[in-house]
Each structure stands twice: as structure tokens, then as C-alpha cells.
Image 1 (tube, one colour):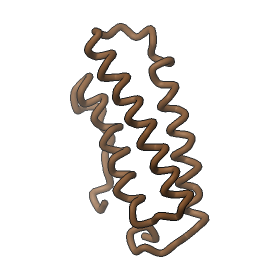
Image 2 (tube, one colour):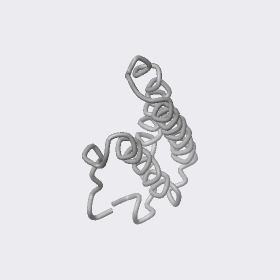
Image 3 (cartoon, one colour):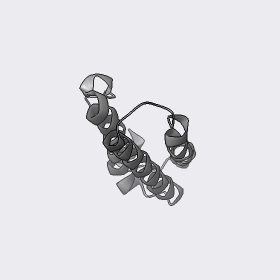
Image 4 (cartoon, one colour):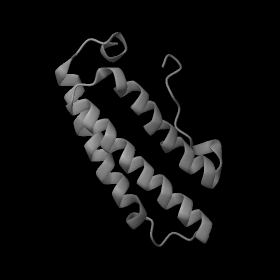
Length: 104
């Protein structure tokens, strides 16, 4: 794996930047997309918190990738995945959590 071994595959790293940027934009839209979803005030607060956290983490991931900072990308990607898993796990239980590759 190029990221794990520290090899700099600029094309692959730039794809990470593009994907992270798109995910940050999507994360910003999440609260608007689900604004009419019936949930308690506390659930709404948690939902909005995770959306904002995901957006910020994706922006950081994009910045790391654009700087070709391969030493930090995997850790930041792990934080993004953790946030993606935490929101549905907190609001609906673990059944919707994303699976991680066992090798990672």
C-alpha cells in the first residue's frame, strides 16, 4: 500500500484530496438534507455536531493530501471513518456502522 509504506504516489494522493473535498461539501449538506427528519432536540444537536465534525475532518484530510503529507493521511482517514461510524451508532445503534478493512 503506497500510503502505508510512505511512497508518494501523487496521483493517488490528489484523488484523496478531491474525495475529501467532495465529502466535506456533502457533510455540510447533511443537516439541510435531513432538516425535516423527526428527531429530538438532543438528537438534532448530536446529528449537527457530527456533521460539522465530519466536514472539518474532511477539510483537514484534503489539506493534508494537497500538501502530500502522507505521514498524516491514514490517521486522519481513520478519524473520518470513526466520525462516520459514531453518528448512526449514537443515534440508532451500531447496526449501521461502516465496516473497516481488517487489515487497516
